[in-house]
Image (cartoon, rainbow, N blue to C red; front, side, top):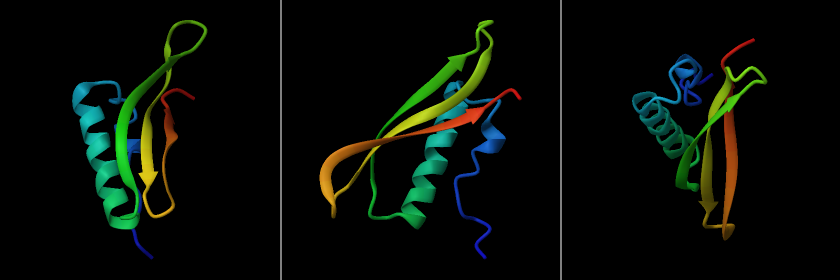
Amino acid sequence: MDFNFGANLKELCFELGTEEADAEAISRIRTAVGRYLPFVSLETFEPVNETDINGELAKVGINITYKIPVVSQDARRVEVILYTVG
């Protein structure tokens, strides 16, 4: 069993949205993709901040645009969302 699998973003959950935490999350994602999905080419990262009906921060995340060159040159996007309140 590989205990290093993933990017361990949960511990950054309450800090995402800050420049330092966003940079750390991107770095962790790049490292995990490089290790486990080397055929994926990461293109762009965009922070996501959504609020609830009261204007409070409810969830944060990152939109990631990527390509898989051996399959297609079309860019695809995945949104990684971390809920900050329960």
